[in-house]
Image 1 (spheres, rainbow, N blue to C red):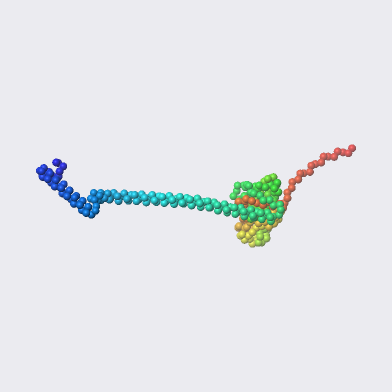
Image 2: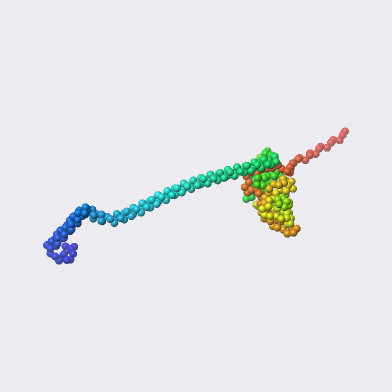
Length: 298
């Protein structure tokens, strides 16, 4: 009995048996007492004991399950919010696209009405043409139209938009034509300041701004002043809007101003233009053929 505690090892076997039996009887008595007390309270001792032993496990399990349910509900709610946001974003994009389309239709309608009004107020025959090509610069120096001589377009015909002057026709084919805009570095025309009525020469610079030369330094010029065609060049009729004064490098005394003009026509985004009848008509005739020498009279 080496496994017994040292005090029990000193006892003889008969006493150890008696002590063991007494201990078992005492334990049974205690269990019976506890069971009887539990029954008096309407409970079962094994059940109470089991509940007591399982309570920590149940508490931990409930905490884990509660945490998992909370996380899952949060994920479900987050997923629902994501789906709703995605749906609202798509609906917003559709509405925005529809709004852009309606605005574009309104702009197209307004532009077409302006072109129709321009054609009705212009001398006949006025040709409405679409711009189908440019020279690739941010501001168009030359543009190609989808109308040519078969449509009534002629050389040196002024080209305008409802906003202002574009330029003149410099080449004509049967079904297409080329327009040199006033921004072209080779373009020049007579211009008049609307307030002072002083004439000058407008030159293109291959840049967004044109330059108005030969305006005397004694002339009062203000930013924003309107610049019109003078009609003195024989190409453009008098009174067409060219643009407005952007900046002025003022001269003193007998010098001349350097005036920079912003064209009124949207040269960087031309779509439709009106081709007016030309003031300067250019015709090409064949040189008369030399007559054969007369034979001497016989």
